[in-house]
Picture 1: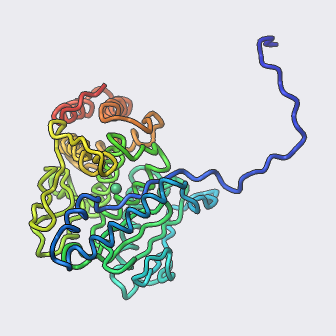
Picture 2 (picture 1 turned 120 degrees about the vertical axis):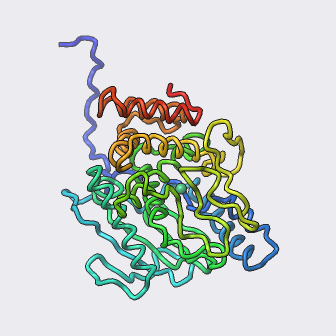
Picture 3 (picture 1 turned 180 degrees about the horizontal axis):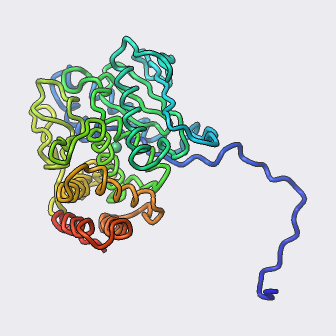
Length: 372
Ligand SMILES: [Zn+2]
């Protein structure tokens, strides 16, 4: 018998209240269009541009403030004992009101809807479910088969899309700068990946850990698109939000992983501010410390590593990123160097000391991050 053992406390004869579900993980209010882009639009003299942008900014600021006050409730439904290999998707229509979930308009077993936004949301949720299940063996965003809900036609000319902690919400865009937010599948994948991060590493949404949170969403958002289209690293566009900008905007997308800082350069929208390397790291108090700006650096590291390895980016490069995100060693407040070191460790653990680890060391070094 271990005499040093702490004496066992007498058991109090009472039944502790058992919560109906595990406590909900906290989530961030993350929008695909960052505040700095909407700020620029809000300064435009053209009411067609500043009107929707100002309303969107007001809405998003309100929701961000609320989110920091409270943990997200409602995402805690009991997981099925055996998660299904099929997604369970439900699409709602907000009817241009700022309400969620809105009216239920589509269930999993329904035939395609007449509304293209509904069908695109359904397809995007499905593409996200497929990549995580088929490639990484993950059942939905919580790993336990969480049903996937989405609300379309949110608000009037609402210039954004977001994951609110339990569902995807899409605006229609103002139609002069932004089109319907259900169009780019990588935007859907980006937002749902915030859910995956919320359930796994739960990276703090500020500074470098926030930029890593954003970058992880861009990486898997792009991989979801690449996997759905069967693209090799050379065929992929490495853009986030391609198809979202209206034809009159001078730009290709919201962000570029291949060439951060080059996604758009437009008189109304301004210029893509993302750096590709630590030389351009932006110290700022806005946007939670530039989380949508400095994410260009780890984004570019992923692009460099994936293209050096060749083939399909979701296979080795994506697997390594997934291992880091879900492996339990990534701290909530991880910095770029911490994440870089974990990718090298994960590469060696899975593939040995071969070209994968070498490609990662080179990629991180090129963007100016030394793997600790
Ligand atoms: Zn995001």
